[in-house]
Length: 322
Image (cartoon, rainbow, N blue to C red; front, side, top):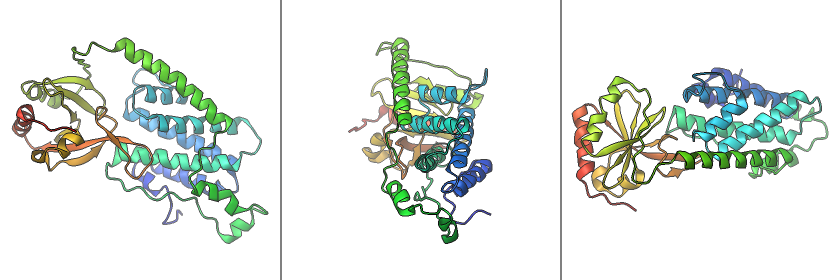
C-alpha cells in the first residue's frame, strides 16, 4: 500500500501503471540501486510512449525509444532540458540492464529526481495547466531499513541532492550533451532549408475536425492568416500588427492570446492563464517546476458570433505591446 505522502501520487491522474512503477523505484532506491535504475529505464520508456501517442508520432510505423526522444525534440514537443533528462535515463538504464556490476547509487538518486521533473512537466503540459507541484523529496527509510544499509552514511549520501547538485558532469552526461549538439545543428539546417521568405505566409494544413474548419472564415475575415497547425492548436497571425493567436482543439471555442498583449491592454482582461508547448510564439515561464513552458491567456466563446466579435475587436484595436 502506498503511503499518503507518496511523491509520485499525482502520476496516478494520467497513469496508474506508472504510479505503481514509481512506487517500486522508490522502494528499491537506497538499498537496491541497480534494480531501481532498471525500473527507472522502464518508467522513462513508458512515459515517452505516452507523449509520442499524444503527439501522434507513430501513425505510419513504430519508432525505437531513442528515435522517439529525438523526434520529440526535433518537432519542438520537448525542450532541451527534458530531452537531456530522457536521454540520460535511457542510457544509464540500458547500461544497468547490460552490466551486472552494481549501479552507482548517486545515479539512481539522480534518475529519481529526473523522473519527478519529467513527470511534473507532463502534468503541466498535458493534464492540468494549474497543477500545483509538490516539493521534491527523497523517500525516507525507517530506522530499521536505514540500519540494514550497514556503514553507509545516509546524510552524506543524500545531502548533495537536497542542495540541488544533481547534475554532476559524468561521462554519460557529456555524451548526451554531445549528441544533443549534433541534433541541434541538424534541426537548425532543416529549419533553414524549409524556411520561407519573411513576406510569405506558411499554411501548413493537417486534418482537423469540421467544426474547427468552420471557424477559419472568422479569422480570415478579420485579417488573420493561418501560419501553423500542430496536434494541439492552430496558429494565426494578424496581417497588420503581426499579433499571434492560437485556436485550441477544445470542445469549447477557445483561443489564446500573447500574455504581453493581454497584460498591456485593459480591454482584454478576463482571460485564464494557459500553458502549452503549442503556443510556440509566446514567452515562457516556470510554473513551480524547473522547465519553462510557453504560456498565454485563453478566452472561451459559446457561439461563433462571439468569436467573430472578439476577433473583430483585435483587428481594429490599437494594441499596446512591450
